[in-house]
Length: 289
Length: 208
Image (cartoon, rainbow over all chains, first blue to last red; front, side):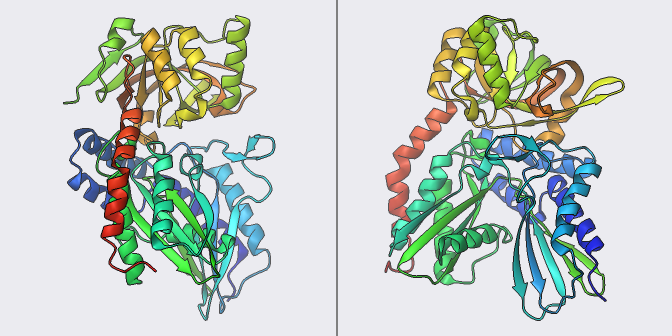
């Protein structure tokens, strides 16, 4: 069998809807852990209402956040997957279907950067990047909508043969510049090395790793642990009104490159929107986070 | 120890000056919301020209909350509420706070020192609402009182809403010039050298 474009269309629409209404289980667990170790009264109160809000959205089938961001999909195509023509268009159509059908309806967030006009569609939307998975007989699609609250603070800078101190300081400074303004506690994704575009891709994909997972590279596992402690020591706290939990996780990935080293820093807010699905040649669809 | 206040709107200067940094509040009464940059630009023009706004802001609560406003056959319906980052509107807010004698402003992420100064002068506090709190905050919606500037998209319109038990929101800038945001920024700056020293000292792998 081939993977029907109609199926891609319905799955991409559904992925977006789930990401808007349900925060990932790993993120809920991380918020619960944060609540357990938060010593600030106000911080605990904020974490309590975050968890309450997530539950209310999920049980009520409504939006966690009114800012639904813009649609961002990462598509990994198995080299054994058999796709119909019109695959890319199916994703665009899937988002259009979502806009027409979602209850409650979503606000216009897709913005023309040249005129600041807002609508539900436009050049480049949805944002889709592609990768390959050798030998797999499925397509994996990850949906991670992005909004201004965190997007405005993400940054990339290119260094020349930087030390680990320099790289880590850049991550810390980027997060401190954002301060109280993203909806904390955040998840931080970092891409180090390669080329500028590839560092950004790595950072974006690193943020999608499950919260609580440990990096397989000992040097990066150590960096993640220390950066998380450093960020939490800043004290901006839940909702940026003070406390011990400014971040839930730091996820770092890297690539060999040349002497120049781009460092890309990404931030997700506490709702950490992320859903994924695998669509198999057989037509079976499995859902994940 | 943070105190929770159930506030009935409108508030007088004395009510507002009694609120302490870190207290939480819930609101009952009428609020005006918008998250539009064009809306702020338009309000600034009206203020400059001395023109009356189509929705009265004087002495009121002007909040950076987004609202999905549905123009149904039965009139406007507010489907949900959410927050946005207020600092985007820093440049506008001092003149709005002074010009309209606002008692409550809010959203998330705070406002800058110029705004805090205006709030201290006139008697106004900034409320931090939960980002990602749409499901909870929307339970407070009772009625759309008025919608103006419908040439703008839903969340950019000037919308007056009646709410009941909207909150909890944190008093993050009080009416005495104190700001949690400024305090936290100062604390973070003061801690930075120690944080960096620990970040480096705890590194398991030696630097290259």
